[in-house]
Image 1: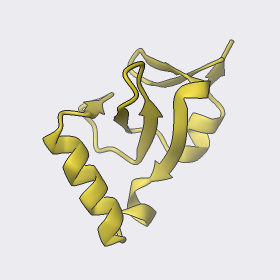
Image 2 (image 1 turned 180 degrees about the vertical axis):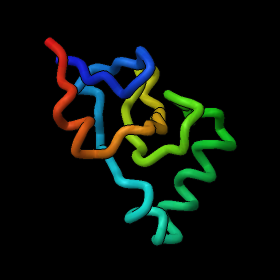
Image 3 (image 1 turned 90 degrees about the horizontal axis):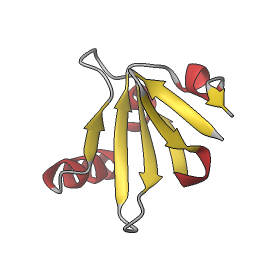
Length: 83
């Protein structure tokens, strides 16, 4: 199965490590540091130019982590599974 993250960005469900709400998780210094490191490494992928609500951590074929920023809420993403 696949999940549509918005604006024609689709990833395999099995590659998803976690789906996180930005408002709740960025309170933690560890989460902010994780996102900062991902940005420095070029592993952040914007799915929209709108203000992001969620970030999705997924593994890539090369074993590195990709972080997708989505304007959709965690609840909406959980309903967007594609076959």
